[in-house]
Length: 169
Image (tube, rainbow, N blue to C red; front, side):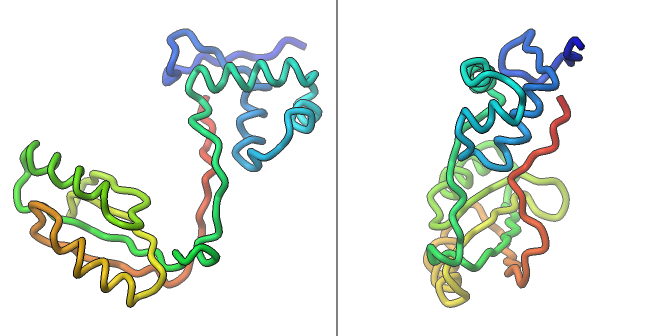
């Protein structure tokens, strides 16, 4: 049976086509990137060399952005997650640029996003505990350029956290 191919409009390379086997590879690697090529090949019913070629192609096309180990935040002293809402005092390209450069240097900042609504940015920061967050707040967050307001939301319990993306390709 011929594999059904679906054109992906968001591919890094124009004209990239992803078939059912490619999607299966992506799903499996999202769940466990430590799978050996031999194990991955067996799961998608390919020979190891054919599977490796597909994985390399998916990397080349930009579908696989990198392979990392997910560390246990508690084990590495970063068990507290804090969400930060930031409002800038001015909405100018210069203000946004200055803030973004400074935010990239904040200790434990895992993510920083421009958002719509009440805030200009949301940041996700990992720290050891409330005392270390209080220190980070006093020593770094209060000195971010162009900030009018910072609101912090300490996460009490993690309900869902995944790195698996929905595959709409």
